[in-house]
Length: 196
Image (cartoon, rainbow, N blue to C red; front, side, top):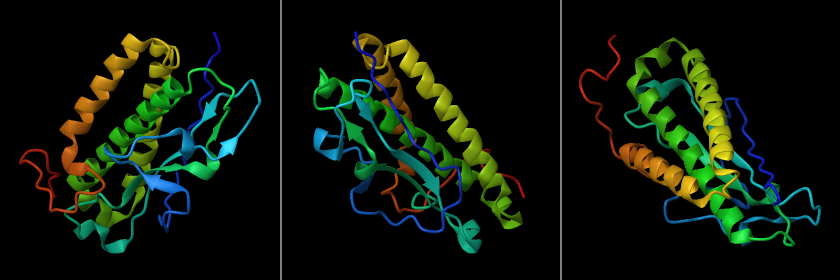
């Protein structure tokens, strides 16, 4: 049985521009990955699929005044940096597995959006806290993604994959206020907010 090669790219830096480039799109519950999203075609038998998923953030001086950090943290897919081998078997299942990883990255993007809002007063002292949080969350994501790889055998164990899909969906639902497209003021429950 052929293993699916997976590549997720992360850039643990503070970006000053998060403008989407041609062929990039932000995670969305309506927009799922498709075969056509993979613009790099390979016939290398060692590569079945590679996805370029980028979770990054952009902060500037007055962001600490914000009541919503959703547009400051972005989770995007880059078609021009993602490849697929059209000779591979079961391409729909491979793409479904890549979607699970994209969804998982969205969970961590939402966790960062929430944590920044809770600790926004810390940002007045500089962005060290945001850098540390980003590094910690990307490390957590990498561990979770490796666990999914192992438990699902890269998506081949469909029952385990369904379990993970449900778990990820529950987390996305629990963090729904922190969806990139939500621009409303977000209220944090008392006791959660950072004390001054």
